[in-house]
Image (spheres, rainbow, N blue to C red):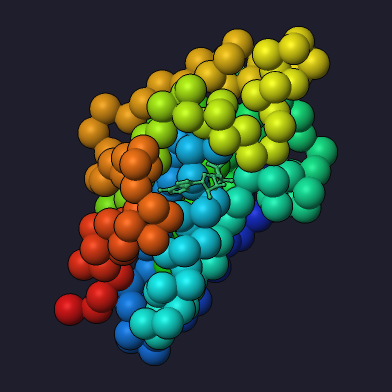
Length: 202
Ligand code: ADP
């Protein structure tokens, strides 16, 4: 069924353009999509990047898995269907920020290529910067920031990514950050250097 049949008449073409807003903010709207295992460092590096960009005068927002699941997605679980709907809503939300020229940092495990491709499709390939936070499973498990690996190993948490649910690493991410033997500051700096050219208005 198309929009007219549903009595829906979008006004996207009548709104102020993203380009106008980019000029206003002197930055390019873009989505920085961080994928990686739980505990790999997505939120830590994402927060660090946001702080660094803020200090440089860049307007950002950060969308993070657990935050989103306490708000707009608080009715979703971890079945495959719910994971897909989780990402669809996140991608649509990121797109709203993108259209307002805001640099949107998304920190989500997003374990499957198909799930990330769905997000890329919604957001638009040219706006989607895929960042792979690559930390070996044993290190994530050792860090066990939220105690979830222990729960999963002891059988008290099912479908946990990396344990009994798959993680498919991206084939060709825009940037890959290896956190092993690096400080948080080094990882943030590496990401900042890699994305800055996508954010600066030329
Ligand atoms: P995720 O958001 O991917 O689940 P978190 O950011 O919550 O992961 O946790 C990552 C943990 O790893 C933090 O406790 C962080 O301090 C630690 N850590 C150690 N080295 C690094 C690094 N180089 N980059 C990011 N995090 C690191």
